[in-house]
Length: 381
Image (cartoon, rainbow, N blue to C red; front, side):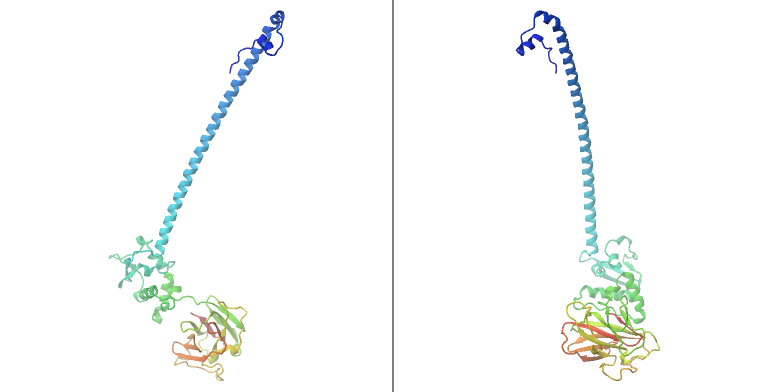
């Protein structure tokens, strides 16, 4: 911006002042005009400096905005990349879940070579029923490229057929079972039972074939050793008959389908079996859970190994249905068949007695008493 140099006379006229005399104009006019010219130069320089500074500020700000825009674009690309990665991971996870859940075609059948001796075909869904098991993972579809196969392409199972085929048949039955009547555990020769359980443990199916017993033991009276892991109870010293007892925390309802299975074992081979080695009873249970305040006494015991708890010959050596007296264990099943409490031994002999009056038809709790320190009772189912 350039302003024309002002004229002294016009300035004075503009402000309503009389014009200076000719002598004053001649004396001071040139000097004032020079001053005004200098002032104009100063203003022009300052205006130019401000313009240049403003231009520089605009350029710096523009560069800052460009850098910020570039950073935002980079951040947007990064976020989009992360979103794509998350989407891919989610899709892979969904696919993995579908595989683990056995989403296969109905005709997806697996051909097996069992121990090089037997060939059989099994639906993949049958093998993958227990998703978290080794067997379920093996046939989930994730390891198709690493599974051992024979020359015909059949999956090779390095196990004895007499051990693996009972498992296959159990899984087939389990796939069509009614929840109220679960598939029965496979029958395996006694001499192969340890090997069978070892194979089940390897495949992660031991608890599937033989579920861990529900509930646990809770002290009713006396001094008992209770092993929650093994589900066992025992006493440490000889005492009076039925010196200690425990509740089982699962209710024993009035149904032939609900059975407690116990293994009564002798910890000493030379120790005898006595009728009062153990005794069985039931107490009323209220609600759906075990009540810690529940109480019981010997009067709640109903049966021993001979039968009626009141028999005076309880402390006598026994032979249950031909079972030798030196046998180390007896398997007992306790069932309520209204109106009786029934105890079977080794699936043959049984004793029973009427239930006492006043016990609720749908809510019982098992009571078990132990007398001798060489007796151990384990809850099996």
